[in-house]
Image 1 (cartoon, rainbow, N blue to C red):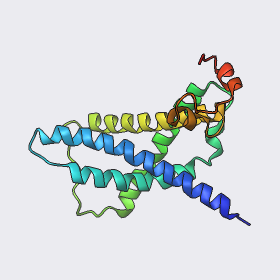
Image 2 (image 1 turned 30 degrees about the vertical axis):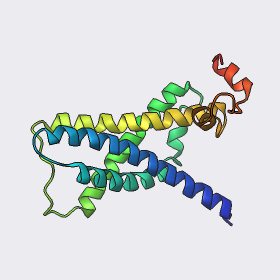
Image 3 (image 1 turned 60 degrees about the vertical axis):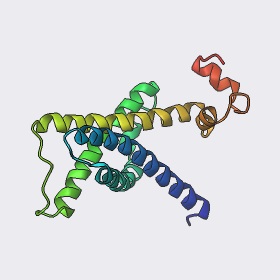
Image 4 (image 1 turned 90 degrees about the horizontal axis):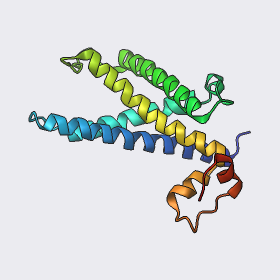
Length: 176
């Protein structure tokens, strides 16, 4: 039987993934809109709506895909390699899932974005996805090393109020 606490914990995790993705995609949408506004195209509202829909769609994919055993292949390697590996895997997973969703749900009548340089647009999109996932998994790898909730305390509390275990600082080779 699934407990209420585990359901709430998983809902909180899905929500945090979606919020992180929405904020990240909104930043990217802002950059794109600022470039387009120079050409007289106001794309802000569309960009933010697209960021929200994309975050919702990818949030569920990320939540489900992170349970794959494939992602633990580098768990005994340095955190940097593990974060890069997971970012690459998730970039591929989300790209494939996004293409499948487009093929299934997007109407044939909808026009695709045309680009003068489609390869450059594709590579830029993939690089953006990779960076978003790299930051996410770097955070998660660090949190796994120093303990759940410790990294949040370091970032969100003043140093005098953060309760981090000194052994974690010593293990990372950091000085405080």
